Amino acid sequence: MDDKPDPGPLSESSELFSFGVIADIQYADLEDGYNFQGSRRRYYSHSLLHLQCAIEHWNKESSPPCCVLQLGDIIDGYNAQYKASEKSLELVLNTFQTLKVPVHHTWGNHEFYNFSRDYLTNSKLNTRFLEDQIARHPETMPSESYYAYHFVPFPKFRFILLDAYDMSVLGVDQSSPKFQQCLKILREHNPNTELNSPQGLSEPQFVQFNGGFSQEQLNWLNEVLTFSDRNQEKVVIVNC
Image (cartoon, rainbow, N blue to C red; front, side):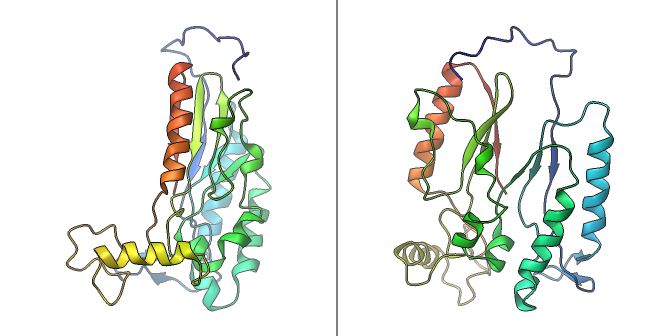
């Protein structure tokens, strides 16, 4: 990265590049239903049609996007209940294969309702192979203990994909130290018997379906941001 030529000043009137964004596909081969609070209707099977339409749009662009960011919850948690997690994931990923540009996947709570962290790490939802490796700056390499990386879609622009469930009780073995640490944090801030309930909480983010960042990941993020600042890069932070 250090040795790449400076592309020069950016013109305000010229379009440099574009990228696609899609989130909360939450596919399941089920009849329509409602969200956890019962306040919003969910169209589980119909979501695949929306994905197909989005891909068709991106593929037909005269100036196609450099990539697409898939911001998590690619399939719905109900798949686990019906033992359809792998089948549903395969169907959605096969649909993504028709996309003509790379897709970067993040992981949300519904990924962890269906799969363990170990499974996701070894699945096609791990797109860390698309990361940018900065020569002579090993401090910008993420640890294997969380799912995060950065990449450069266009000179002087760096996208940083973060693991928003690095600290979470979801997707990890209940006997593991990390699970016990995260559960302790949850119970210190959420006295409710139902840990998914924010009822009465002054800090409603402390619920079981949420996650957080470890200090290790934040330290790594700071290193990447420091590099980008020194090299006058614009940064986009990506997570679920």
